[in-house]
Length: 191
Image (cartoon, rainbow, N blue to C red; front, side):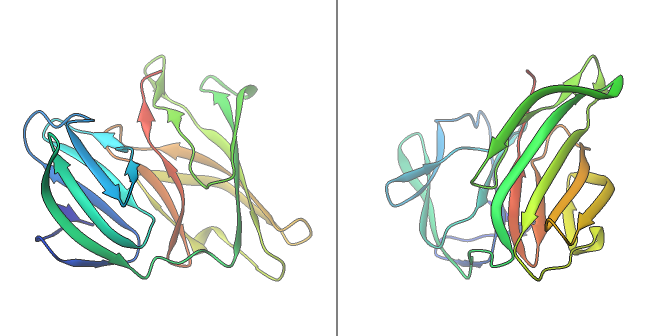
């Protein structure tokens, strides 16, 4: 098992948001599970020889394989963001016509699932994120993993950042980080 590409041992303490990857054979949900107390996390991506989760809660976590404990670890120093309201919205755009809106999707939890490809071409998503009063944001303030941001614009009046999000790797989860906090997670599907 690894967290942000570093090896993890049983009983370790992980600090901050982490992408946890469990390697092995035939790793399909619910064969492999990640739980915090009574809450079971949904896997974000499934590879040929791994399954991947993202940590967004503090506390004791357990990885189970086929119902039996495989590994446990502690997570600390994941904090609720002070600069974000938590509202993330997106409009799916047709890959051939960026001005043609598709289905509208919204979430209050900072996570959004979206399709991977349309007609063998990557699609882009128009997104907007609201920030709290007094925050000034540029595209350089947001770190991306397995996706890219284009056409970024921040309005000081509305406290809203508008941009296009493009996935870049069909086998890894896309997430956005602001001020050290992962505030958006998108996992790939084929629908």
